[in-house]
Amino acid sequence: MAEAPIAIDLFCGAGGLSTGLEWAGFDVVWAVDSDSDVEATYEANHTAPVTIADIGDLTASEMPITMDDIDLVAGGPPCPTFSKIGRSKIGSLDRQTPANDARHYLFEDFLRFVNTIQPEVFLMENVADFQSTAGIERESIIEEIKRQSADAGYQTTVYELDAADFGVPQHRERCFIIGNQLDEPNPDLEARATHRAPVRDTETKLNIRRQPDAFTQSAQATMNKYLPEETTVGAPGDRKPWVTVGDAILDLPPVSPDGTTPPKTADSYRLPPITPYQEWARNRDNVEDWTTVQLANHTCRGHNMLDLSIYKLLGEGAGWDISDISQDLHPYRDDVFTDKYKKQHPRKPASTIIAHLEKDGHMFIHPREARSLTVREAARLQSFPDTFKFKASMVNNFRLVGNAVPPKLAESLGEAIRDILLAS
Image 1 (cartoon, rainbow, N blue to C red):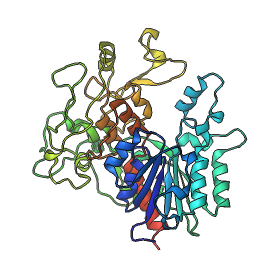
Image 2 (tube, rainbow, N blue to C red):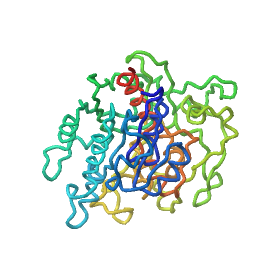
Image 3 (tube, helix red, strand yellow):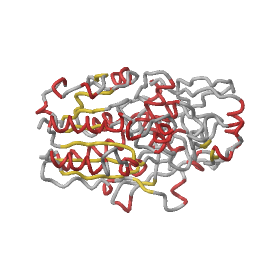
């Protein structure tokens, strides 16, 4: 094996999984996705070539690297038919069911690459509902994956992880499958979690950075009312409290300081990073001076006065089901979608950032401003650093962010695979 283990990323999207694996010390040498909106963003943030094509039309021989050099095949087959939201949308179409949707079996293309390349390890990601999904002739897709993996020589472990437990300021439960053919046990990922639920009120208060350019403590009920303190990393009992929405995004400037509609784009920082997470987001890639970096993608969609009025009425962390709102106010069909108007709570991790953000932002209302989140704020909640630039249209950027694997979670997975399975 080379000094840096080598990986490829199938169904790469914007590159959240690639980013985390790179942080963990992997050399990601190739990526593939069928979405043409992915290309500019992936190329702007990664050195690996990306192929835009239907993976069903590709073979491992078309990769720009020798198969024998690949240590890890990673990827997340698209999940519309596995998620509850996806099944609702598909079920609303005439004569269409999740089981006969072609995307239901993209995991087979992933396993086809694994079986052909025979890497030492593979890593597959999908929604948590993946574990309970059945196919047309299969009792369980998970069991099918286990059987196919065993036939190819891999022992597999299925994990259900919440990204919030790994330092991501968002509750995002996802299913991961690790398979290895090294005759080694797969890593105990839950034991590697770095964060936990807060256990006392003091953990909801801000522990301000001590650098000279940070704010000093103040008696004002501003940020220290909403942001959590950080604790030192240690044994499982000493894990840090979850990173919250406020901890992640409240240093970013208002996008409409003069009240214009639609909101303006803010392209520069006005405050220094106040919390450790904010400093990490600005300086993750060793940027020495955050004031020299342009603030990218800090733009949200415009809102009509009805939206703004509803947003203003919502309390901290409060939300309404669509069924609670008059039919005249519904933004979309209540017989298909069960989405909510929800203001994100500044003292808790965000709710799961989803690709549906490309349609509207009603589920992701800013905790302090009467608007939905910007692309940059959604990216921070997914643990993308500010140096990561999204290059599609604003609408498609929301989709790219929502579909991504959080890089910080991917980093933890990559470190576990590297340290335990690829150490020899």
